Amino acid sequence: MRKLTLHKIGMDRTGDVLFQIGEQSHRRENFTVNDDTFRASNGVEISSRYRPTSNTGAVKLYVKGANSLHDEDILKASPHFFELFEVAVEEYNEAFDEAEPWYPKQGEEYWVVAMSNLNFPRCGLVKMKRIIASVIAQGNFFKDREDARKALRVIEDEYDGLIVKIGEVKKELEL
Image (cartoon, rainbow, N blue to C red):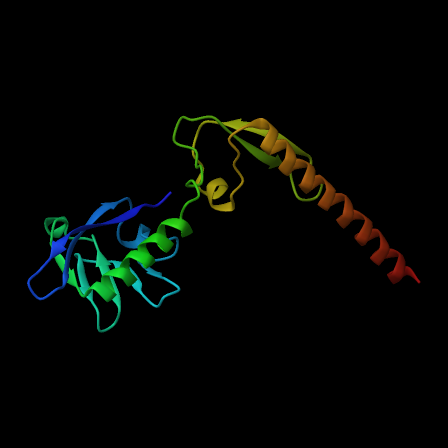
C-alpha cells in the first residue's frame, strides 16, 4: 500500500495556500509501480524525484525525493491548484490501496512448483528457504502449500492439453 498526504498550513497574504508534503510511504523509482511519476485523471502529475516543489504552469506536484534535507519545505499554490493537487493525491492513494505483493525473505519458508525435466515433466511441490532469483523473477513462489497446489493443478491441466494437441498433430502428419 502506498500513502501520500498533503498538510495545509494556511494562506499567505496574496491568498495562496501554504502546504507541506505530509506522510509519504514511497520515493523515487518506487513511488509508483513503474517509475517516479503518477498521472492523475485531472491532468496533475505527481512525481518523486529530488525535492518537494509545485509547478502550476505544468500542473505538476513534486513530492519528497532524493534529497531528504528538503522534506519539510513549505510549498505554495493558488487555491485552485491546491484543490487539483488534493484530488490527484486522493486518486494516487486509491490507485495503490491494495496491499503490497508478498515476496519471500531469506530464511522464510515458501513453496515452489518444480518440474523434473521438460521431456517428462513430473511436477511437485518443494518447500524452500533459500532465495533463488530465477524462481522469484518467474513468480513461481507461494506463501502456503494450498496456493502452490492450485498453481500445480493449472500446470498439469495445461500439460495434459498440450499432450493431446501434439497427438492430434502427429495423426494429421501421418495422413
